[in-house]
Length: 66
Image (cartoon, rainbow, N blue to C red):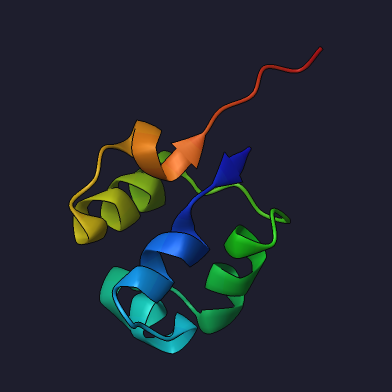
């Protein structure tokens, strides 16, 4: 699953630490999400989307496996 977290974070002038603190995870989790090495739980996806004031679909891009 792809995401727009890094783009949204940079648009707001936030560090990975800032975002991690805001949504209650570690900086390493944000790094893993941004690099596509970790898929957010539904709860975390809602927290991140809500923090940015975006829908989940605008933050997380679901791609069906072929």
